Length: 398
Image (tube, rainbow, N blue to C red; front, side, top):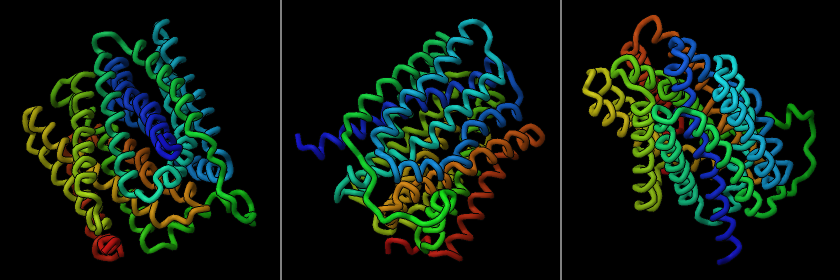
């Protein structure tokens, strides 16, 4: 096996060993807050917001660090650190001392770590991909979704076995990811001329590069919108619908998330089989708008299997949208700024989630889940129509 293929395989393995624990956390966090502690919708919204909040302040710093240091060392170290918070929560839960404040600290800690892992991992994808960039992006996205699905499936055991074994599994898998990260091999930063300016200016230079690009700017704006509406729905609204409308527990929450990810994996398989998409911007817009149409099934209050069908279709749209958006950013980012540009991509993809989670938590508390769902659909369609009409997004790749 060639050295490039070996790096590719270890890179993909590293994705799996980080994302599977994230999938477990995605199910356990709302389960612990809403089911185990029986907290209210607004308290769940606050807790979910805390998972994403550190990224708003640290993701650009993570991009600068990734552009300046060896990515292998960053990823190896952070896999080790990421294993600690879950182990601490497992210990307190075992001792019967679980509290809402402890879960807030857990969410914040994982959010901080994530802000440095993602730019380091995304910044070296081009070096692993070679000339097969769009295919590698699609495969990486598919693996991410598949690993999430594995984590979701594992987390379904919370109802039967409790959260302690799952938190221990989360820590163990993260520790094993140190091996994958190290085996990628040295990934020193690209040699560039010394940059002038304060470090804050260097961190935010990626934002300037994206904003000045007619291709990357509208993609970033669309991602931010999707993050607010769809991210908030994914983190807060869907678990509340399962609990309040369908009287579900961890099994049903896990099943809902799993069906969404099966949809994203379906999209990945279709994209790989197709061999790429030429008009990436138009595909991004259509995929996001179709997601709103799929979610509208929930407004009819169908049986649970009908709601799951809508979530599956939403996942297909989400898979296409994420693959197209990331390809646009990867293709148009300068080599010496790639980690910082992709940090902006991550910021756009996650920045709306904390506010979306908080907004939908309070919105649902006072107006109900179906009014909140209608708010999400209307917001996505309106933003998509505006960007289609007044930006270059629909013409990217044409």
